[in-house]
Image (cartoon, rainbow, N blue to C red):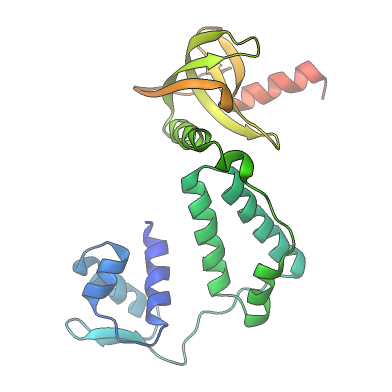
Length: 231
């Protein structure tokens, strides 16, 4: 958990009005007591009116509240729809993150705006990936490989049911409404290739990392596509 997120969580926990010990906060946030002491001190120095002391417990002054975030109806709708899309069509880790982000926003909205979140009548059925747990797992593995710039080794089944072994430098994941595709630099073809994630037969993230090379980045891929389609 990032420190900024942890500080936000501490304030939210103290808003409950009950005295919270450093030990109970540490257990909830899975950090050490010493970390809580340091975080509370930093919050106090920044002006957050936290009452109490180490060894006794902490609470938040009752008249303190975070300023509410203001969104109009369209912005609320966009945020809810976006989080529902990620929750339904992304990997499990991103789905949980989308729900957590929406709850954080909800916590600092005015009551009237908070009521609008659950009332947004736009839904994103997730049955396609719910029935393909392996696809969700692949998405998470691919996202990690892209972030860490690690070469992956895959067995890929093409539209003719032919399976080839590939070493790929993963660059980006693209969502097309019903399938995810991976854009990668293919060491076998020495060129960019797109792969349907649901056609991977196996995937292994190697220990080998790659550095961006001229002509092999995602931006280079987009430039190539624009030339091909004349856009």
